[in-house]
Image (cartoon, rainbow, N blue to C red):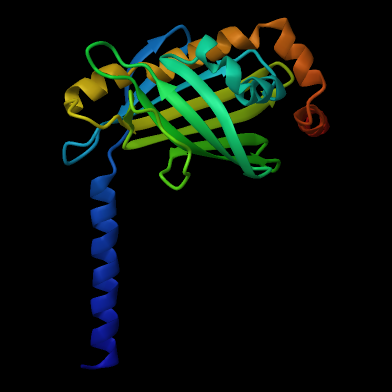
Length: 233
């Protein structure tokens, strides 16, 4: 076979791969806009659970949000259905392993998962990115009374706007395991991002987190963002 023919076959193969990848990815569909929070659904294929996302602008500095997200013990106070979130260990400054317990309505058993959390503060884009994904790599003992989640992936994107505002998006997809139908998984998951941002909005108004942020390492970074923004004006 000539080289030209081989090259054309590979180009066709790559093109087909691209088309298949596009077919696997659905567009985001806006299904609710309440309290200034937009909620989106990304339909899944092949009977898998859908992905849900919520976006809003918080009247809050980025460093205050960072402090709240690092306060693992208080997640049950604002994150819906969170029973507990416990620190296990640090791989490095940007990689953590956490233990998570999730409440599910009766008669379904509560769930748990080991989460690998990766944090990236992009100073060029003035944004904080956090990815939390379930993993089976850690030997941390799981409870016999709970069902271990097959999959849980969450993404935070927090972007600096100015001294008093931050643009924030929270996205989650989960497979709780067990015999729960996909339709029920979607029903209980669709408003989780919305409720999460609603809870975070409430926490941003608490004076103790505002004071904690003033002593955080993120404060100087956010101050730099503010200085750069003023210079561009």
